Amino acid sequence: MAKDFSTMEDSNRSSNPSIHDISSPTRRTLLQGGLGAAISQLLAPLAGASALAGCASMGGGPLLGFKSVPVSTADTITVPEGYVAQVIAPWGEPIGLAGMSRAFKDDASNSADEQQAQMGMHHDGIHFYPLDGAQRGLLVMNHEYTDDGLLFPDGMQNWSAEKVRKSQAAHGVSVIEVARKGAQWELVRPSSLARRITAATPMAVSGPAAGHAMMRTSADPAGQRVLGTLNNCGSGITPWGTYLTCEENFINYFSGGDKPSPHEARWGLRKGGAGYRWHEHDARFDATREPNEPNRFGWVVEIDPMDPTSTPVKRTALGRSVHEGATVAVTKDGRAVIYMGEDARFEYIYKFVSRDRIQSGGARANATLLDHGTLYVAKFNADGSGQWLPLTHGQGPLTAANGFADPGEVLIKSRQASDLLGATKMDRPEWIDVDKNGWVYCTLTNNSNRGVGKNAGLDAANPRANNSMGNIIRWKEEGDFSALTMKWNHFVLAGDPANERAEARGNVKGDLFACPDGLWTDARGVLWIQTDMSTSAMGKGDLARMGNNMMLAADPATGEIRRFLTGPSGCEITGATATPDGRTMFINIQHPGESPSERSDPANPGKYSTWPDKKPGGRPRSATVVIRKLDGGVIGS
Image 1 (cartoon, rainbow, N blue to C red):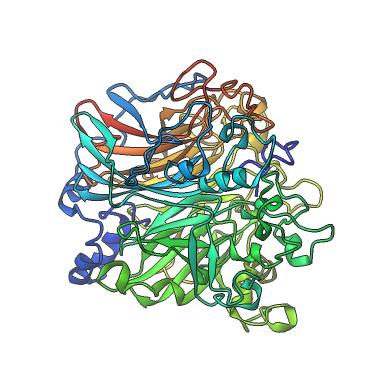
Image 2 (image 1 turned 45 degrees about the vertical axis):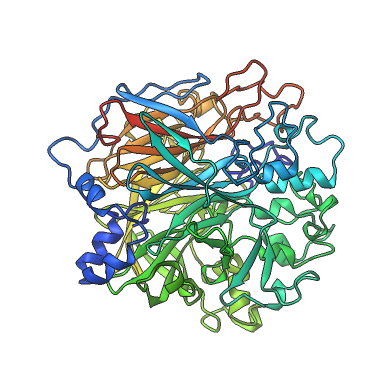
């Protein structure tokens, strides 16, 4: 979650089955649907079936086989007894582009061109694509935002076009090649597959909003080619081998006028943006000069990691929103279903169902699959039932008379469309995943404005006022993943069961946690939960007993939750993936040392953390953490 540096008075303000492996719930659903022969070809890009199937079929012991770690406020990573954690690929590390290997400079004096060839800032969603089973592969990961107090030696002083260019280069996505060498993992450099995708990389636009009048700018009068992706938060993967990166709090980068239009206001456009100041040297981020440029962000972007020459594509059929992630499931007849949460207060949960079936042949064979289908928004009823409401032009209130001239406009204005349909306003829906029994889980991080003043009040799906703790909701479709109805309940209400305040009292069975964010189901069925407690609220009030942010493991069958990892000071735990054999896990540590109320102080960058380099006064750096068992076993077992 990117910090909104312009409005810090509210500590919980939003600045704003997944095919995680080839033995996922989706794969089992496909096989049960009688598509075995076709699916073997569909899943070929995610090789390593036998190793992972063996991992998934392990039995005999409890699902959670590790001893919990205690809460921590230390500036370090803590993992269970018998585990080891290794740091790789921190911000600024050269990614392995041939002839471009300038090392990270401790004083942050690397140029924009050097940053273009280095790991970006603030790692988030991540996935491992095997190249050689569990020994070598690609890590593809998002870089959500920048802290310009750390990115430059003098912070935001002497602001310039070159600083804007470097900040844009530190956003986006990294594709790196990694390999195991003995007991360690390391980057493969140079690598022909290494790639940086940034806020300046050319992107294609596809789907119903491509070429729409609201997508056209002076630089792109056709409305079909956008420069860059930014605020890339959660992610997803497809059975045809591509990576889905999601544009979250994009509006913070744009500066609007004194009187925003109703459309601009609904998306939060304001004068000056949220402090990034890109508009001062890049006119496309000045919405008074390019009013349609913000409409070109807020999409799910599809990337082919195996082809470094391929053009990323913004898939407008999936709708425009503050996308946290894009989790893929597959229907019994082979169509793609993508679940998406919108990380903002009182916003929505969506799913997209493709019109066509997934084809064998990888990315090229499915190049237009996500351009055709139906987008739905969720409505959760008080009786535990729910409906998926279609965002279809011409149906119900989604007509020209209500401001929706055509299908493209419905997708560009997905929030307004969902408002009119009466969808359920949620408490910051973030990551979504599917367990082995077909339950779909979604983290609702928090919402301190629930039931406050004129804001939306309590409802069955969002039952706590001033929701500082968050919860995890789950549902099961009534039929296939493409069903229009569901049954839902709460998997867990986060917080301390002993808390005297009812609105913060949880029902956790096991180790306490708050503010669930990241979510991932591994091949054995363990539900991994990552937290995002605001640094300005940590150690205070209801969160006093929680310590630093953490990752926990849950048994969906019993509801038991155990704390597996705690992170360094001020960080957020983000993203999770594993090698096909389940014996190596990769997670990301984002914004260690984050300031509670402001950008980092360039004169004292290590004030709150010096992780991972631990140099006195040094800069904290987001990084990837590799986790293994000392005995070589499966993670979590």
